[in-house]
Image (tube, rainbow, N blue to C red; front, side):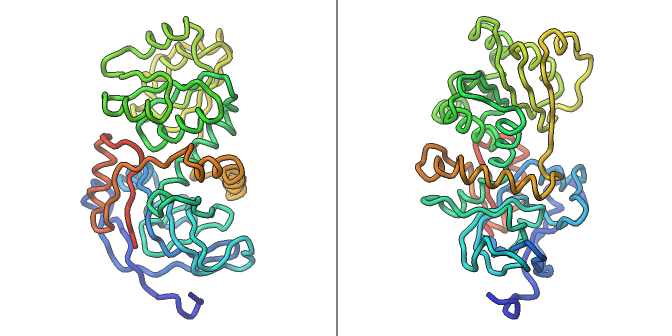
Length: 335
């Protein structure tokens, strides 16, 4: 497609105010134009992520300059190159981390955040890669420096983040612990390689990890729960353990005992991906292509798909995410 061929209008999911899934509607909006260093992607599929739900509820506004439309990851075909883009070609099948706008027939993404669809993967699978793989690599490997032979704990092991973190930690040599909320989810994450799976509804994960490790604890923890899990993580962390907070689904923490942090010499950090610079996200893309793409293409790491919804079913897709019954990624098929 050339600039002259670009349609003026496209279908996209828009929000009629902030609130529940009922505020999501499909409407016609202008097709975006790629700027310098950007590409225009004809979207095949988009990933549904928890930040999309928060944005829909009015709790996670798009950063300045980003598309107001939902959608942080897509797969599709490059149909237009912005000025100065030499790293990609027209017609290339790609997946991309986007600053927003993925729930649409066309989406703009920085060229540095665009990666080829791994060989052997479907476009629906490819749409479930960017947000979770960028997030896990950024926090578990780049920020916390997980090493082979270390013990790693991820809460919410059946989520998109969890299923990704389990597999990557395992292929890079860690001993993997995870918490889940049902036997169905426990079986799913065992099949992904988790060494120790704890159903938090039935078992106190603090006591169980203490028993498994002879109270030595785990070296690295990725947590999206927050609330009372903060102090529990400090208890199960090893001496000089590292913890990263990427969400606080249980809300803020109260009455934590900072003496544990001090006595164990713990590092508790946190981050969100969306506000990070384009340069940093480009660094993550390069690392993933070099170190993770080979595992995706050989099947040692998989994209776990929970359910693929048609574009018209976007409300149901959000309700599936909010119900927390999913295992892996929820995908919206746009094409």
